[in-house]
Image 1 (spheres, rainbow, N blue to C red):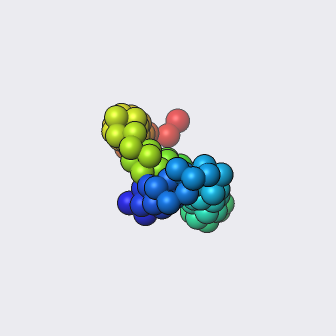
Image 2: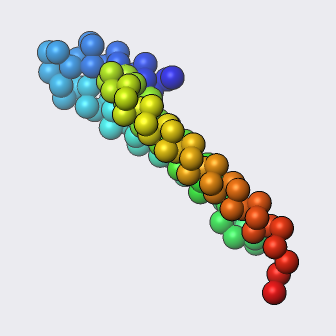
Length: 102
């Protein structure tokens, strides 16, 4: 919701006069959210964890920006695809955990 608000406000305030400040706001949203997502990635003895969470944070920021720009169909379709991919990964992870090690 925050990325949608920042994007929409920047386009309304700056986009009609000069699109450069609005695109700077969008670029900084991506940078900031990427930084937050990178903080979710942890390397430990069991391997790397948090990649899916980081990717989810980043793509949902992009969906928020699409909403802020009025691209509702793109935002909706992207949300559905992300849900299907994440759900499929969850199902595959559960199956992999149930299989006996060889």
